[in-house]
Amino acid sequence: MLAIRLVSGPARLDTLVLPIRPVGPAEGPDAPAALATTASPPPGDVLAEAAALLPAARLTGRAGELREHLRPGATPQRLVLLGVGEGDERDWRTAGAALARAARDETHITVMLPGDASTALRGLAEGLLLGSYRFRMTEAGGAPALAEVDVVVADPDALAPTLTAARTTAEMTRLARDLTNTPSSLKNPQWFVEQIAAAVAGLPDLRLRVREPGELAAEGFGGILAVGQGSASGPRLVELDWHPVEARTHVVLVGKGITFDSGGISIKPVPAMKLMRKDMAGAAAVLAATLGAAALRLPVRITTLAPLAENMVSGSAFRPGDIVRHYGGLTSETTNSDAEGRLVLADAMAYAVQELAPDLLVDLATLTGANAVALGKRHGALYSENDQLAADLLAAIDAAGEAAWRMPLPADYVEYLGSELADLHSSPARGAGSVTAALFLREFTGDLRDRWVHVDMSAPSWAEEDDAELTRGATGWGVRGLLRWLPTLG
Image 1 (cartoon, rainbow, N blue to C red):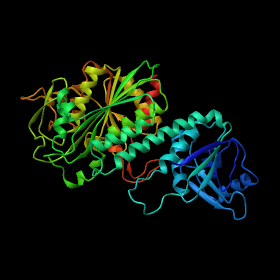
Image 2: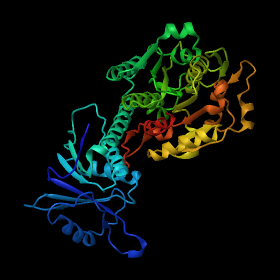
Image 3: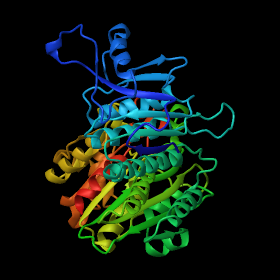
Image 4: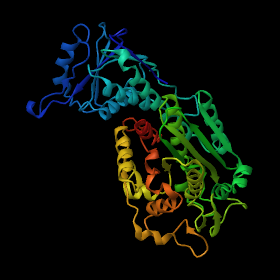
C-alpha cells in the first residue's frame, strides 16, 4: 500500500502539489481559481509561478481538478495544481483520489497542506489510499509506480493520530474490497474464514470462533444450514469479539456472507448472477470494521457475526416451500430460495439477542435488488425504529464519505409476513422488497427491537466505474461509516 509520510518541510522535490480553491462570488464568475494557503510557503519562485499559471490554465478549483506543469531544469521538475473545492474532508478525499490516478507513473510526490490540516489530511490520505486501489489476479499490465507521498504540515507529530486513523480506515476498506472482489471459484466459506483468521493473527486481544456444519446443526442454526446445504462447501458462522477492558457499550455487528448466490432452485437469470461473488460484502464490511476497531484500540466492545454460506443448485438444495426452523425456535416459510440472505441473518440476529445481550444490534447486508430500485446505485437503505440511533449512524456514514437514506417500517406491510404453515413468511410476493425484508429481520430482534439498525447495502457495495475514491468493482461500503460511528460509543 502507498506510503504516506508527514514532514515539516519538503525533503524531495521531484513533483510538488499545491492546492487550489474556487474564488468567492465577490471576485466575479470569470475569476480564476486561487492558491490555497499552505502551512509553509513553497520553495523558491514556485508560488509566483503558480499564481501566474492560474489565469492561463482556466482552472475552477473544483475538487479533483488537476493540471500538471513541467519545469525542465528547475526544482521541482513538475508542479501540480490540485483543486480541493471548499476544502472539506469530502473534497480533499476526492482530490487525493484524483491525484493518485494522475500521478500513478511518478515514484514520489510532495503535497503541501494548509496550516489547520487535520480535516485535509484525513481526506487526502483516504483519497490517495482508496483511489490507488486495484484488484487484479494477473501480473500483466504492471502496477502503478507511485510508492511514496510526503505531506508537508506544520506539526507532523500532532497529526500522526489523524494519519493513523485514515490509514487504518483505508486499509480495512481495501481488505473488504479484496474479499468482495475475489472470484467465488476461490471464495467459499472456508476460504473466507482463512482470510479472517490470517488478519486476526496480526492483531492482539481479538477472539475468533468459527462454527462448522456439525456445530451449527447441534445448536439449531437452521437458516444457515438450509441455505448452505445445496453446496459442496459447507456453511460457517464466524464470531469475532473485540472486548477492551474499558468498554462501556457492547454492539453486535451482523453481516450477510453469501460467498456465491446462484439463487438456488429459484435460480437467477445470468445477468443477475454474474456479480454474485459480491453477496458477502456485508460480512466483509463488518469483519473489516472490527479489525479496524481493534487496530485503533477503540474503547467499545464489538462482537461481529458473519454467517457464511454458498447458495447453490443441487439435489440437496433447500426447496421453495420449505419450512426453516431458526435459532431460538421461530419458523419461516420460504417460497423463493433466492431470498436466502434474510434466513442466515435471522439465525445470527436471534443468537445475538438470546446469547450475547448487547446494547445495540446493527446488520449490514447486500439483501435486495429493491435497494437500487428505491435509492439508486450509491445509497444504502437504513431501517430503524430508534430516531437517535438512526441519526447518529447516518451522520457517521455521511462524514465518512458514504451515503445512506432512512426508509420506513410501515405497519401495513407486516401482514405480508403471515404464513399458514409457519410463524413467518420470509419471501412474500407483496410489498416493497427491501421493506418487507427489513420487517422480516425485525421479528428476530427481540427486546433489541428499539436498539437495532438494518442497512440494505446491495447497491452501493459495487461501483461500475472509477469515481473519486471509489474504484471499479467492490467499494468496501460500510467500513468507513462504521469506523466513524464506533468511536462515538466509547
